[in-house]
Length: 251
Image (cartoon, rainbow, N blue to C red; front, side, top):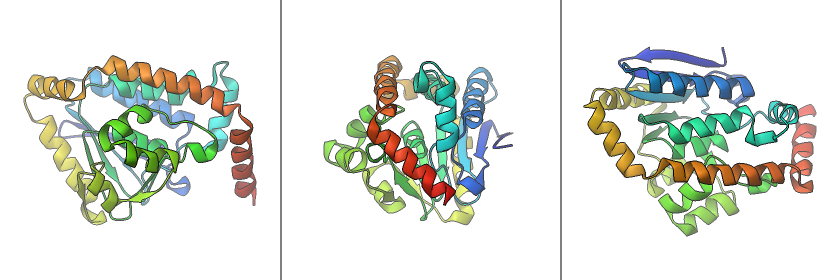
């Protein structure tokens, strides 16, 4: 299984389990993650969700070959694909999300963290959103969330320059709540998720909603991003970037 699901102390734990590819997401993995969110939302016994990765990596972004195949199969491309469906579910998910990040967190590996209430990272964590470098635009609401959370200057570093930041820099800007030694990372994140799950549910969810503001506004922004992303996928720059990636993979 490329996404392992278990329940622990009122927490649904989803582990990305494709370590040989640094947990790069396939369409099947997006579908499994979306289903996990829907399950957690519907189950009154689940109070929080923890997402982590196996094999010393969190998520290296999309599996490029699988991503292109999925989008060729969809008449509306990225807008109707499993990645688009997952981020739509993410925008409307109302329970606390926690991430335990080790190693690579690239593309969606970072944009997912923007939706998390708590992010714990090992010193090895590396966050990057290199969309522009691939001839693409940001996704998962990141073009709204990054400037809002970190300011325009940091947003330009992360989204325009596509710079990679380490766990310490993530802590400095407020992306990471705490840097934790790798041997205790998952246990620490799980303990925090259990603490959230044990709190008075109605008060917790209401407070989270008040903190985050209008989920539908974020959802609408995501739709704008997905439309722009679908157009960018057809650009010469994106085709050249994907061809170069495919050539490296074959080599």
